[in-house]
Amino acid sequence: MSFRPETVRGAAGGASAPGQIDYRLARNSVVKEFKRGRLSRLDVCDAHPELVRTATGMGSPADQPCPICAETTLRYVSYAFGPRLPPGGAAFANAAELARLTRRAGDVACYVVEVCPACSWNHLARTYAAGRRRASST
Image (cartoon, rainbow, N blue to C red; front, side, top):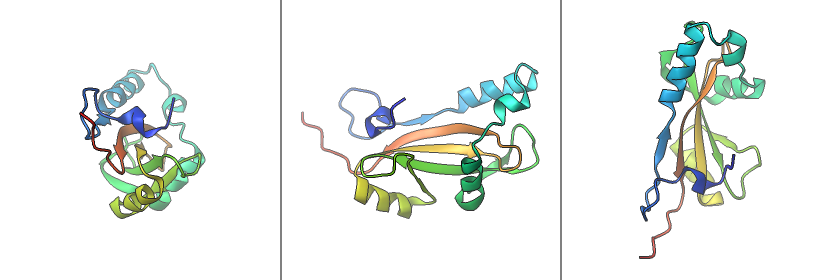
C-alpha cells in the first residue's frame, strides 16, 4: 500500500477537490463477525502500543463507545503522510497542526484511525488528501 497523497484523491475525471473515503462498511463487517464469534478478541484488538499511546495522549474523543469492550469512548488519531514528513507519518491533533504540516510538506495523505485505549481495538475510519491544490489543466 502506498502512502502518497494521490492514493486518496477523489475519483478520476479531472476533479481538483480530493475525495474522502469512509471505511464504515468494512468496520461494521468486522464488528458483526466478532459478535457472531467468527473473529476472536485477539483478532480485532491488535493495536500497536504506539498507536494506543498516541490515542491516549493526543487523540480526539469520538462520540461513541468501543464496539468491542463497550467500556471506553473511542479516540480518533490522525496521521499525515507525504514528502518531507517522517517515513512513519506525522500525527496531528487539529486543523492548525495539519495546516502547518501541509505548509512544510505540500500535498499529504491523511488517515484517521479509531482506537480504544482500553482493549486496543483499532480500525481505519477514513482517508482524505489535504494540502495545496494544483489547478487542473484543461
